[in-house]
Image 1 (cartoon, rainbow, N blue to C red):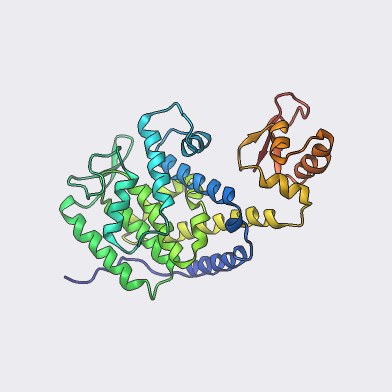
Image 2: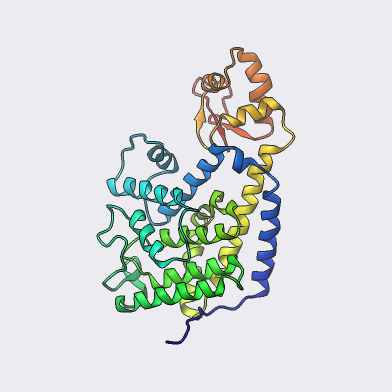
Length: 330
């Protein structure tokens, strides 16, 4: 059987984006925020999980996903709640499995789709199409070809990993995986998880970067890029799309970590340390977390400097003294 090589061409735009991403990765590595602040890592992991399941029409909000992951009761569709639990468990295993192993892919699919899919952890045994409304816009390869296609894809990855940049290799895999559509369900979630796992082989910092968040933000463009590649017969458009979104994620991450280590008053750093992102806190709750008794000191030394630097926002900005006021770290 002839060796399979996915059709794509490394373009000047790809090379430019790879260089920019590498430069930003170097800058992020100068900060220790991800390594020293567990809440920062967990918040980004929650964002990854929420974005990835939301792309697949999961109905839970970011706050509801956070509550599910933190073990709180959430009222919502049972399947959606289980999908969140499964995705979080799968993402928590990043770094503990070999992303170049086809058997590991099946095992992780079993975790990603636990109790939500009949054919969990095994390749589909029926045809699959991608629909937009009632219109089928793409038919995946027939089920009898899936095992060989997937084996060929992993064989190519294992051969190419020493000569092809991980940013390109992981994105080619992402597209090829979506094209083959090997599972009954969970293909998008697995493609995004696996790209992160492959990128971690290059730099562990990727386990803390919610690339899925940018994909969710540009969801229609994500689908359009995939459709364009189906039509053209190569993955160039998708590679450039994904590299651009990884680049945007790094811009966001640089703001996040540099904000952590900038020349801030120690009081503001302490305040930020006790606040999770996107979680509202009352003044009383923050004083309790900081073990402060003086409301005036809290306001002057902690709250106002953080507000002035736009590091936190008010839930009721038009009424600063509202009894319902809370503060949110962005």
